[in-house]
Image (tube, rainbow over all chains, first blue to last red; front, top):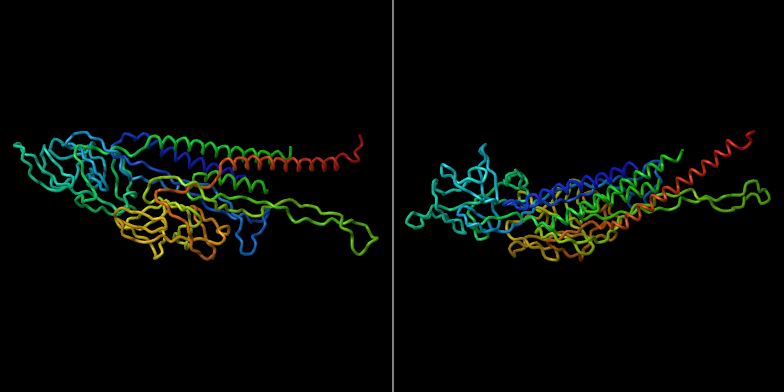
Amino acid sequence: MLRSLWNAASGMRAQQEKIDVTANNIANVNTTGFKKKTTVFHDLLYQSLERRGNAVAPAAAGGRTSTVGVGSAVGAVRADMRAGTYLQTGRALDLAVVGEGFFRVELPDGSIAYTRDGSFSLDAAGNLVNAQGQRVLFPGLPSGQQELHISPQGQVFAIEPDGEQVAVGTVTLAYFNNPQGLEQFGGNLLLATEASGEAENRAPGNATKLMQGYLESSNVELSEELVNLLASQRAFELNSRALRTSDEMWSIANQIRR
Amino acid sequence: MVESARQETITNNLANSETTGFKRDLALQRAQTELPVLRVGDNNRLPLQPVIGTLGTGSLVDGIHTVHEQGVVRETGGKLDLALSGPGFFTVETAQGLRFTRNGAFTLDADGFLRTDAGHRVMGIEGYLQIPAGELTVDNDGGLFVDGAPVGRLRLAGFAEAELLSKQGEAMFDAGGQAELAVAAQVKQGFLESGNVQVIQEMVRMIATQRAYETNQRALQAQDELLGKAVNEIGSLR
């Protein structure tokens, strides 16, 4: 009976984690560049029932032993890296990446973080910074340059006061073998991990396009998340019902001798 | 005892109602061997004492069966989410050897190898599957293509007696020496197969289990009372 109780409890705990993930997705429905997370469940180990004192028929020759599982757990929380919707903002320093690729941001300790959130601005010294004031690594960008035009292929043109466009460089983006493996760092930033591999910095090729004056909003689908929330709640309820039934059965066993 | 093993199986099924690729278990029970009851003291027909019936000695778990029915296939849209339609398994390499699973929630690692979300490498027909950058498509037969160029084929395995595969957790099965057969399962990209647990069925089974447990407890109690009467009341002087 103890195992039944723990099985049900493990199911409740796993559903609880899924609800946490779903709640975080819903909270970030309007976060620029946010990628929704999905929860993957695993079943756990299986134990043989064939022990002394258990009423179990031994496995026939060539058959398999009777085993019973020990519940479920969250196996992985996976990031869904599909693109969100693109919103036109008209700001010259709002950039969106269509296709794969990440902007690079320098953290205060000198390490590099990656982001799809392209709502940039210029700081007092004329450097391109993100919303938190961290420097965006944008090679070829002359500091202090106010008027910029960025082509979909990543060429940066400075607009002179007389309206003439002067090519000043090319934007490079970071690419990963496995972008799903990037670690969430908060503040819309992601960090490279062993799972994601090393970043490869290159100019956006034909597969990627940069859009100036657009922002990528989150890829959270509210209706889908709400369905997930309802399903998790019911599954939680189901496991709690199983827990109660197992508890009642134990109580029945305890009442054998009144 | 038997009912409590059954309850353990049911709670495990319910806990895994949302586990991708999970196959539900079913605890079967059977009666213990029945013993012949002989008429004692009937010396007329020696040497054989006449059999007057049989006496059951309770029940036992006959085996826990895994039901390999197809689970509900749900659309996820993920490029690396693969579901199998029809019998068959994906082949995965673990530290303990090859394992078989219907959980097709795959991911790539840093070197571009296809892995399960627990980190085991997925096997292709010619070894590991390394997927270069680009647009990945998977056809119905498990062929992998990046930007239209073939990069490998999933190794799909079927078994004559899927019943005999033993569960290893993470929705993986151990073949236990059974030969792999060719399969006609179709691979669907952008879909995942949910567990095949049928919640209502499990719920009903749970209620029945609880009641059967209760009935056995009552029978035990009645027997105890009977014995108590025999011991304490027969021959007591009041």
